[in-house]
Image (cartoon, rainbow, N blue to C red; front, side, top):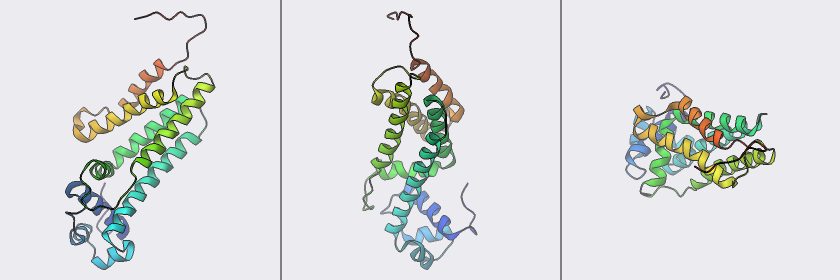
Length: 205
């Protein structure tokens, strides 16, 4: 839900800039448009962020902080590897649903033309996500909770579920499985990752 126009000035500026950068691009968005959308004055923007570039970089740091906090809290709590991963993916998809404008901003910044936007290593956010999933998967395999497999392959399979689901929600909202659907799909993946029972013969399809 967009912040109220009488809400904290900094948050209103961040929200307005995110929406405009995502829809119009960095170069095409002027400071005047940002402050008008936020319902504040130019001096307010300069006070909090110094410049349009500073505002853009602050947006990225807000997003990075939200993702890293979700990652840390989800995997730090006790539980099996599966429980921790399900908690992580559920939390990440919940964060996405609550802040879809943030996802559109990242997609526009990463896939769209640079248009003079400050250089940002968006891949670092994905690398942090991927390495966290890999670490929990490796712990699950070592503990015998998950079948033995290449850790990166397992991480890719799990991340494919949430990545596709997020893209679907952005492009075709009516087809989105939602958070509950993501967890159901992950349940199918985890069924395939269950360790093989001793003495049970595997048959070829």
